[in-house]
Amino acid sequence: MRKIILSFFAVSNLLFASNLLAHDYPNKPIKVLVGYAPGGAVDLVARTLGQNLSASMGQSIVIENKPGAGTNIAVKQLIDSPADGYTLMVAANALAANMSLYKPQPFDIDKDITPIAMIGRVPVVIATSADSKYQKISDLIKAAKANPDFITYGTPGNGATPHMAMKFFEQAAGISLKHVPYKGGAPAITDLIGGQLDLVAVNMLEVAPHVKSGKLKIVAVMSAKRSPLFLEIPTVAELGFPGFEASVWYSLIAPAKTPASIVKTLHSQVEKALQSKEMTERLGSVGGEVSPGTTAQLIAYLNSERKRYEKLVREANIQPD
Image (cartoon, rainbow, N blue to C red):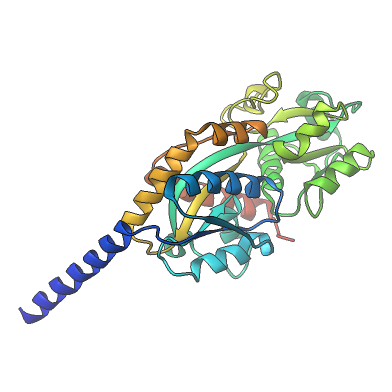
């Protein structure tokens, strides 16, 4: 009986401390990690979200860029941080993919991460030069079936989200293309414009200016819905592959064991931010959209994406850079 009473008081004290922490939260600046260099899509999303959260929560939101190892450096810093709501991370698809890509496994989503909220999505697109002979997805598929591994496409690197998206597409279309990995999307686009590549797979943010200038043409959008930037361009799903979807997605996460009350507060603040004009316009400006939803929905989605990437990595034998 004495042990039961002591356990009851221990649990009560923990709950009291958790509630006190949440009631006082936040009372100092919040750091948000980004596993990419400044200026990219994830950085852009994180800074826009940070501005909204700072205004609504009354504390500074400090964006800290920690690029390297496919975002694993940033994830490692996150999971080693105190689970008090003051170190967060804006994560993308690598969070789900890297558990399969890297050996040994760098982290475990179920054990090391507390998902908070989905933020938004930006399409991955297949683009070619304006004068390319592959003006339609059907042209590309026909040529690829006639000459396997002949058509080249560039991506931001082995294991990058656009590379994975193209592998999903190759599987769906029953074709085999030649992958040329780069250190980022920009150099791949430069080589495409210069005639060294047939195609690129990159996120909409990187390719949109070149499409508007007339140098490049988007052959297909790989997201589930058409991009608001280029409503005339069909999705891969519309072009004969129902259910196909490969987007870059963004979510807010925290270290494992972050108190539920703090998660609830942060989720509520993110949902509020996603309704703001700044967030909808910023994501819309890069061809994306906000993606509100519950924390439970994000947890389910992360598990689904992890399994999908695990299967792809195994079947396509994808190796990270």
